[in-house]
Length: 320
Image 1 (spheres, rainbow, N blue to C red):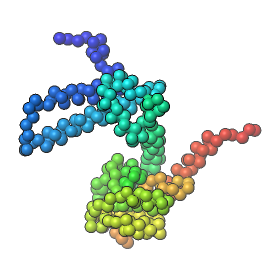
Image 2: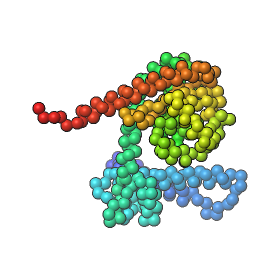
Image 3: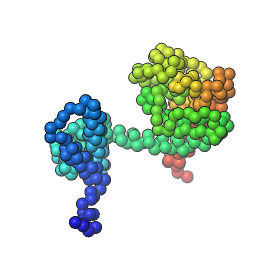
Image 4: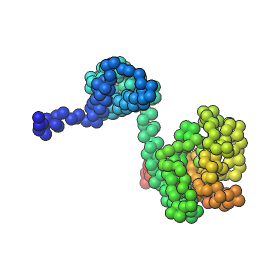
């Protein structure tokens, strides 16, 4: 049986909200059809089957959650539970569970009359995303020059909870060692020069609050393993101005990091140079650190200058 183009078009979901809702519903139907009528336990392969089903249920739930957020984002008004159920063809109990989870995380908010809207946390996350993309593009020329000058890998990272997320990684063309880090991944603050450079320059109480949430895990025999050891390391960072990862994440790799500061001296990011422990030997570290500190200071000054220009351009002009 052939369908003409009009029929096919009519069968398609009309927008992204309906598409996600349909995908979630289709996944649920497929799972129900895939269930055996008389399930049998197979100790040799049962665990993998359960894992696959669990993954599909998780994806179905994620699609549903994103579809609800899309629906709220496209609506001009706050929506009630009944309206959400009707538009997404969901059972009340299913929609209610998803809404409670979203509300708990702050991604949506409950308005008067038990209606729902997007939460301000999304605004904060959006601003962070824009800032990080902008930061990466503006800092890249400095990172590239430093990588070419030293012949080593240069990283840019930002703090996220108790971890540092790599925003950028610039490798010199003539690099001697391949560093295993990847842009978009993260590592603990206590085992990286980036993390220690940021922590050491945060207000004391804020740093202590972050450290309290760390679960210390050894990656090598040199990894910092306690709060007291980390506090001592941060004090050394403050005294000399730069941080060192002395084979704490990976044996054979040493890193030297420095903070990128805003106009008030608060760290907004950090940068580091990474290379083999033999090339970044102890007697070479102060020289490498001087280059890193100089580059970080140049970036901080450039970012602060741009911020000041933006503020001046947006300030009201005095009448002439």
